[in-house]
Length: 131
Length: 119
Image (tube, rainbow over all chains, first blue to last red; front, side, top):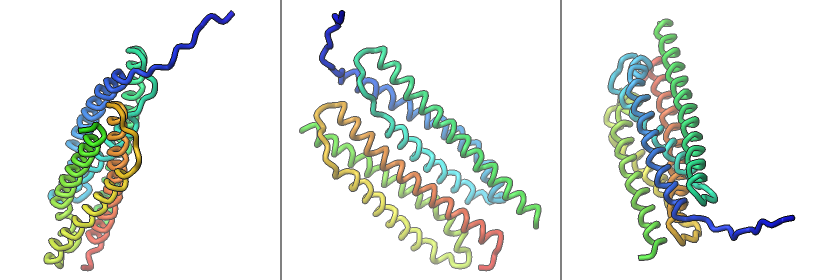
């Protein structure tokens, strides 16, 4: 016998906004931390790639950093939207899935960047060996 | 002031500021690249850089306005935040892709000239 009554679906708007306000700073701070670590250490790769010409190496590094920020903050903003958050349990679940997904995405992008640097360095050293 | 008007103003402010600071940063950092590519003609670097900056501003503002003019029903805080994040996210992503493509083109040109200096 079916005794359950279906409640009208009330979406808690305040809780959704709270979720957004927690998610956004975390995503932005994660992006900044990763970008700073990556591009502080990539300077040495850039110097190798550009055969020690410091000016252009640092400019390239800065340009890549800007592109990295744009892409990742854009992606973080695009995946913001959540559906149907009624209580704190759903809020924590939604937050963890969003932040987890974003961390994995950041990790993949970080390794792609590292591959790019290694490839550039190898090509530069090949060229140096040929001459 | 209504909430939707406030959202639109906020969107334009954030997007405009991003455009401005991004353009300045590209201008100062891109100058080294151009100077390295046009080694034999240093007088061409400054004007070319300015033209590139103007083009960047045009494309950027075009994208910002293009994403801005769509119809939306902004009734509460939630839809406002969603609107802002969707629009700004799309703008940033498109700009970031374009920017990275530009750097790769610059690096390719620069490397070809550096490894094979005929100019």
